Length: 280
Image (tube, rainbow, N blue to C red; front, top):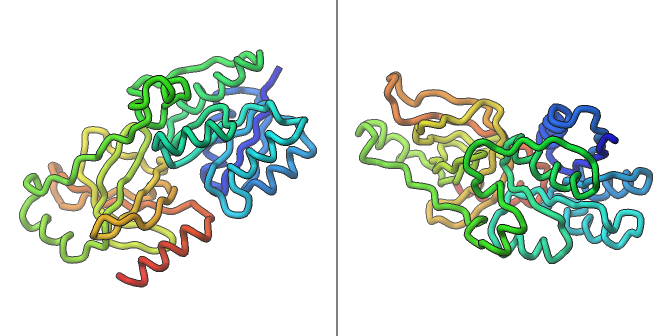
């Protein structure tokens, strides 16, 4: 028996990434996708599915509103609903669990993390699926409701270490400070990095990160928590890495230029970014 899964997200890049991973991990899977809650409802009125993987923050009809409709509809009331979100704070997840989500997955996530969440729900439905747990540390994106209720620390977001100015060459340390436009926490599957913003638009962010042993990869999914120079939150956006380049013409440079392309289609986020960009 093959699984039938509905993927709901306003970002086409994320929908395509999830579908690609599911096809690789679950041969024979039947997939449906929707860019928002309204389109998902239209599909669910015609199709039955085994699992719903839905973004939580979407324009139009949000994931929470979609969940309310699902739980109130007899044909889908017991369908496993996995919340996919860029927020991992405990209070937010607990609220979503109380609203009726079956499990949650925090962006960005690895294919193994996605498979573990999906196979867990399929197992409960009696559908055979081979799960391949992530080889590395679980991290914030790999929390579970059981861990959340029993071990609150499992979903706490670890504080990222600040860029180490003492480790930078003097010339390189001065240049970013003159034109920086804020900071961002760059969240990738398995790590979190501070990012100094050099250029910001409604389409992308160009910034500087400190080199680590685990370098980001091109086209890797990412979440950015953008703050102004005073540390005030501006917006949380989803994107992918479109460019990586050494910030200096040296093999041992500790600074990396990075470009993140945004994939969200949320007017509220664009409005917040527009207001901030206008002040720069």
